[in-house]
Image (cartoon, rainbow, N blue to C red; front, side, top):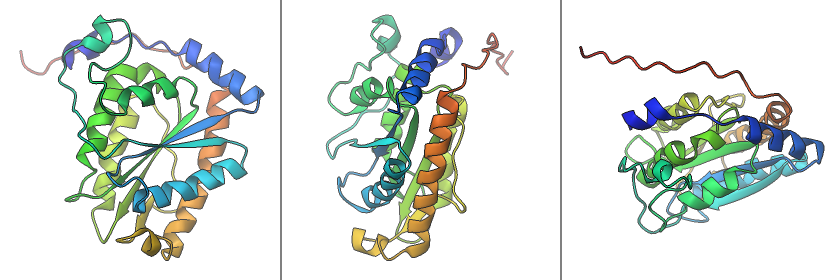
Length: 231
């Protein structure tokens, strides 16, 4: 990925103009990415609560499932940039669909179950490729991470997901506690009253952030310099 980082040109002005138009037209939209292999499991349940609050606050919400089939990680092939398409060479999972939908989105929520104290591998593969191929569509747009666990590992999971936000200059949206729910089945998540309240507040905060940042002009982009530590 070093060559990509060295050559990456961030083109945010057109995206920002589109976002500002969306806000003025009342069509602000947030994508919620379900990184679980289960389409309607615990992670979906948490994201659904966030989505409901977004809709209540005048923001359209769309939940996208990355799928239950095999997903791919980034092979650093460079196709997304060489081809000029801005799309990933792997077309058999949902990554390219997310890239396409990201063009019209003003905010993002990425949700994952906790597997061995970290996010699902399928979500990480999609997020890596989304950042490489479609990072220009993420820059300056607020994002949030949501973790669903039976018992533990949520904080490490949130931390890993959020690293994609900071490298893409995405403001991180939080709630009044860490964005996590607990339960081993959707009906158990619905009994996590504190977790549900966290998700509701996250929806309120994300709606506000998406509208606010979409209305701003794009941030100045400082020319990049790459310094290697090995001489």
